[in-house]
Length: 83
Length: 83
Length: 159
Length: 159
Image (cartoon, rainbow over all chains, first blue to last red; front, side, top):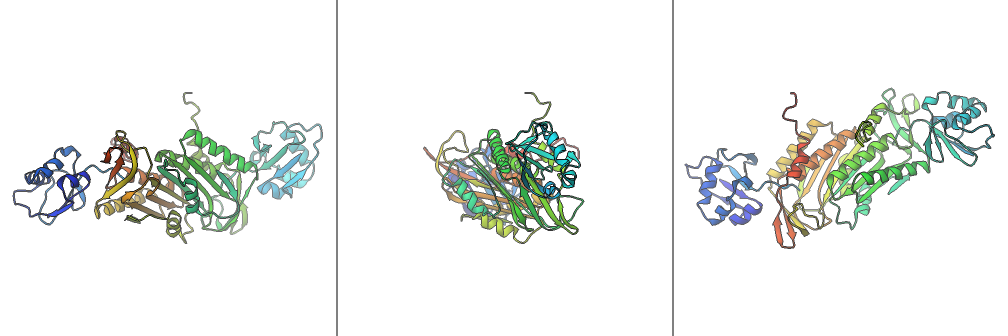
């Protein structure tokens, strides 16, 4: 699974992209976030306030209960500010 | 007094500009039109239907009862069609 | 700034010159009107070739200056450019350019629409179209008046 | 047609290329967004220098293609061009270009306004501003949502 982070989420996590192998108990975006937060303080800061975090699965906006699976491209970013 | 004609009014009158000396009894745009119509058939055709004739005195749109005097620049044209 | 001219214009160069060095501008709206082939302004005729635009030198410029001033009272604009051509114009040729620049995009967009609606309906130009049955003067259209009327204060609006 | 690029663009050349040879076009509307100096997007901060736009390569293009397709269903358009830059941009630089061409000027004007409202508020870009207190990420604004909301079907509108 490919994970992408943009803007201040990228800065807090410490990198813009990473490949992870998804443990079987992680089935939704929300569970993925909880699992990431356990990996280190940068993730904890990035996902501190989920009201300002948006997610996309395979380049489509999704809600936190959207399913995730290995092979997906999952991106996290703040609300877009436009150009 | 300088008279100007545009578009099909110019074509019907036969020329685009002329200088005329105004007789004292002509005091309004409407009286000027009546006086012009007596000058020849081209003027008669140009001013046949006053609903489609617009007038300007010294480059401002005016109504038919607007006063005219020697020294004015008076223009006649169809309703504008824009660019 | 307004210009009434026979010559064509270069949109990119005009926009660059108009806005150069002004870093307070956030948005530049523009509209280019071109000669459309095969679809007459007048539903009763069929334009097949060129159009010829006649204008009233002096009054046309004054009217364009007045509408620019009106737009500037309605919207906070950093720059305005209106170029209108006259003479014979072939299909595909540029007729008119409106450029408005503002710190706010809505001001630029709305003033550009306001100016082009006025220019296409109220500017002192008369259009002669080449049709299958010879050259024909275009008559003023009611639908154009409706587009311009959107911008008028409503008669019953509160003062 | 959409493009997301780091490089600057030449408005005149882009419009010429987009509309060349199409004599059915009667009007071309365009909007250029530029980096405005000294007036931050975010009222709480003060942008004094450059901005940096970050985007999501792949998804940004898909979203731009989708909004172009949406505009084409709403208005009869002969041509559409959206160019959006990313990376570091200094005050006065061009950020975004929208060009819409149609046989009807209202279709060109309205679709151009629709697209730029969307781009300035909903496009997947994130803006980092240089301020007096260092670089700061801009937060999404409620007033931009209002501009975009004008184009949404009303919730209670008849089907």
